[in-house]
Length: 218
Image 1: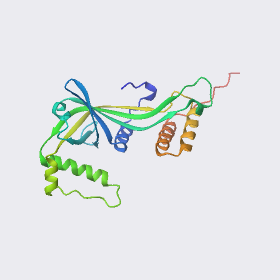
Image 2 (image 1 turned 135 degrees about the vertical axis):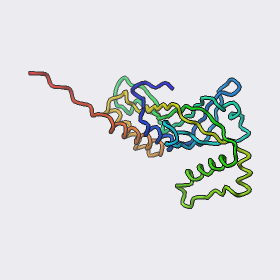
Image 3 (image 1 turned 135 degrees about the horizontal axis):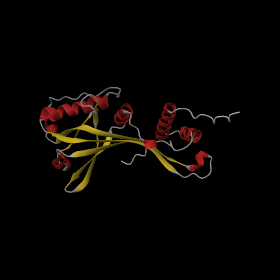
């Protein structure tokens, strides 16, 4: 991923946070000499490896896993994003842009076929995504249906070898303009705009304040 220095986000906690908050990712590998991608939820195990490990499963009928075994694959996670109008800056000589946050995770794909391992992965999915439900659904690994399910999927894990984070949040603009962007996004009211406004606000809080020009020496 092309990441200019101003937009690089190397903080591991922020990278992990984006993955967990936006866990529906895009898994990319090479299949029959061409790029192949599958959209699917991925779980992050932070403690399993120095850079974490991704866990998932896909339909056994999906051809991606056949050649992905042992490959270095790419998992893409996209966070909030928003069009930024130049009118929001209230300044001259500006252009439109698009703000976004994303994490790219690279690692080696390892397929999992044994029924016990597959049902464990499905159980982890259920525990993670049902946790916020008013009445969480329980997964019965011992049922006949669950055993049949295991035969229709392939599990996998990806030990992450490298993480790239890009937080493109108007860092190339003065602080005052970025604050105006936040104000417009807040007024929009939709969930995505609010999430982008939150990201920019946190980024501003982490940066040193702009200092006024030093007075001339007398």
